[in-house]
Length: 235
Image 1 (cartoon, rainbow, N blue to C red):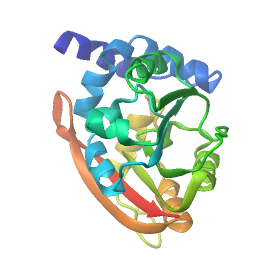
Image 2: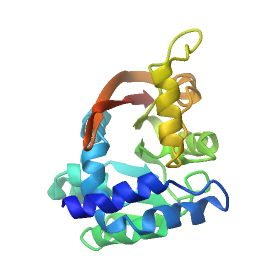
Image 3: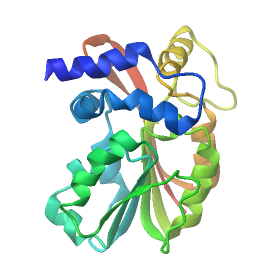
C-alpha cells in the first residue's frame, strides 16, 4: 500500500501542468496514479461519508456525483442501498479515473458513468441529490457547473459539497493569513484552486441546511492539517 501511495505522492510533487486543455491536464496528472487513487485519497479526502449522511439520501432517490473521479464516494454506501436508488449518475471528464468508475458501473444496473463536464451535462431527468466531492475546486467552470446542478435538482432537492478551503469564510471580508496563503499555493500546485467565492455562491444560491469547517492531517505529514468544509443546501 505504501508503494502505491508513493505513485500518488510523486504525482502531487510533480504537480499539474499549468498550460493546455483542462481535460488533457487532468488525464496526464491522474494517469500515473489511477491505480493508487482510491487508497491514497481515502487518507487525504476527509468528510465524504459525513456529507453523504447529511444529504439524507433515501431509497428511490436519484443522485448525481459531479466530478466523480473513480466513483469512490459510492464505497461509503451499502451495495444493497445503492441498488435501491432509482438512478446514480457519475459524471467526470478524466478518462483514467472514469475507467475505474466503470468497474462500479458493471455491478449496478442503475449506475451510469458519464464522460462529460459538469456544466455541460444534460440528462433527461432531475435529481433528488447532487454532490461535489473535492471536485469543485478543480473545475475552471465551477460557477457554470453549480448553476447546472441547480437546474438539475428537483424542487427542495439537496446539494452537497465537501472540499478544501484556505480558511473559514468570514463576513464581511476574508482576512488573509500566512496559513491561508500557504494552503492556496500548496493546492494550486496540484490543480486545486481555493477561493472563498465557492462558499459565498453556495450560500447565495441555496438555502443553507448545514455548513461547517474541519481540518484533516495530510498523509505522512500529520503536522500539516488541511482545512476543509461541508456544505448542504436545499433548492
